[in-house]
Image 1: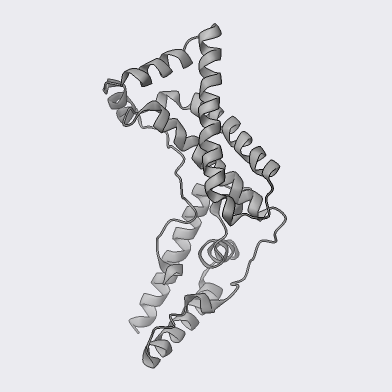
Image 2 (image 1 turned 120 degrees about the vertical axis):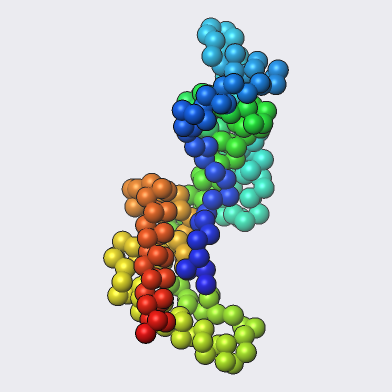
Length: 229
């Protein structure tokens, strides 16, 4: 059942994580390709060389952001052309700042241009999801428990499934804190994007992942104890 699973929520792209000192030291010792070395040299220099490199990097990130916006455009018909252009530009601006802040985290496992593309794709995806939820009310209750029903089950299977759903509902109401219920319902049941929920609740993705993990662990512990009685 999806509500008890440990699949990640709303993470088409992953924000590059900071390196530990050991991994950073290993990355610095890894030989880089010529193009990547040139990018790093220019972005760590000053004057006209630095300004030119930043301008080229922004153009590269803008192309990546526009690609991601265009890829998702069909799923967001309510957004107009100017809105999409604005999203792409904001994503390019934000990802530029992120790349410059994380230059020392570049591991050299891919070309520098491939690495920076991920920043733009991530930022564009996050901003599009936020635009899609702009002005929408955050659902705090399951829109339908029938989403978890499997129509291909035999009658006996349906009975067992319905019994499990009842047990899960009861466990959610009795064992989870209000905050855990809110996070679980939003992420696992109503499929609210995690970055949207983090923004609405003024928290972080990491904090929400921990809350979701703790809530699922409570539910599994409750179900396992009931099965053992």
